Image (cartoon, rainbow over all chains, first blue to last red; front, side):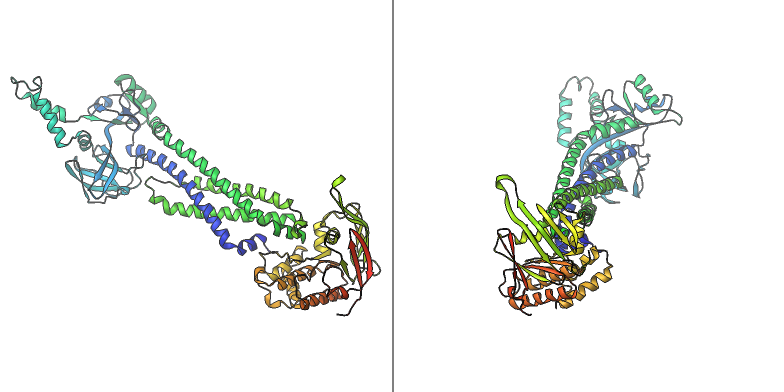
Length: 395
Length: 239
């Protein structure tokens, strides 16, 4: 039996293909939006994975360093180590900064860590080993192993490269020793230092004539930073992190979040607004895509009503006509989906944000696309079956 | 529904067709009586709007009559209502249509347009294509077998549509001005072919025409005027 769908597609293959590709671009944009959302979530999780903590200790009544300013003294971790169930406690500092040379400025999220701490997703070089002037950069930053990067007054050497380590806002992550991060966080430019120093020296209470050495101590205290953004705690084996977190909150007047709560803050709260926006955009885009697919499939049938009437006139049964419409609709959806997926694969790396294509999302999109095609073809089939054969001959 | 001697291939009694109802009703056919025997080619004449196409569409089970009786090969198809459940299968298996315009399927080539009908009837692809090739040969367009419809001239398209009408060896062919798009030479060839088909395959053929050149070829003519049918003897000039 001659396949009506195959013959009809073959007869106007160019138009059919380009229609499919047009739908594909729309599907591609929809998939990209889903990918951007997934990317934000994955980057948020990557941040938590990088921290490798069971509990996040942050400034009291704050949501932690990703949502609100959080500041703790850098010797506070010692107190944490005395609590039952606490195995390790590490300081950590975060700041977002533009780094690099004048020609190549990159916005990054700096993460100040204990130089002995492991670094996840390291793909080249080594972790930090020295207490100062070393960096481990993410591939996405564009820096390479051995690059020397100036940050404020100092120059840092890239000793390691990670892959897929980004902040939830898509900035590549850069690891450096905690002390350096603290200094960068607090370091002012020369003019500001000069003005502050002058102001301190002109204050008679801080620079009394009777005690000329006092100003040196005041300046040291004023220009040094002993604050961190959070302390990462690992609990001993067999201890429940929620219970240990409750103990920390009870005794030390800080806020402590177990990992799952921090994940909720990071993903549920911090990127909630962005994800809602993307989600809404995704819904609108899906509806538009569905409407366009439906309209295209329906129009395809409408332009063939005369031929369908002829087919009915010469005795073609309804199931063959229905199959033609359904197969053409599914073919269009398949071309659209495959070209859309291909487009996303090629254009996703060009996006500044991390675009993650999950297999689940891809399969879901395929099923939705085919479902829309089936629904659209039902409308087309209904109109085709309603055509009287006499309309083929103008009767 | 095979053609049997002395049983008319087409028997129409008191057939009527009215469009609309009440004050706006228009009667297109009034008590039509018509008999066409197997192997016979009859002409159906009449001015525009006289109801020729309506009659053909009623006979072809395309249009519902308002009343009357239609029998093909002795089998009642319509008796104040259709007796044949699957009218599409009836058209496919028993009636060949030739129209003023070819009405071919544009996404099939010439051979496929013809072979599609035997395939619908359940014949194998090989047999269907062979039948299509034979008919293309018969109609002298075998060299255009693989051509797409838009690549064929008007005359070639019409010949393909005639071949399609013959593809299933139907006992009845209804032809609505089949020679209209053809030049007089081709028109005569088509008429000769229809007469040959009528003789060879014992097919009953009704030809609606306005063509002055082919009217003398019919032995029997039906004139339709204002929905009323009159029978007349034709010249029956040899082809």
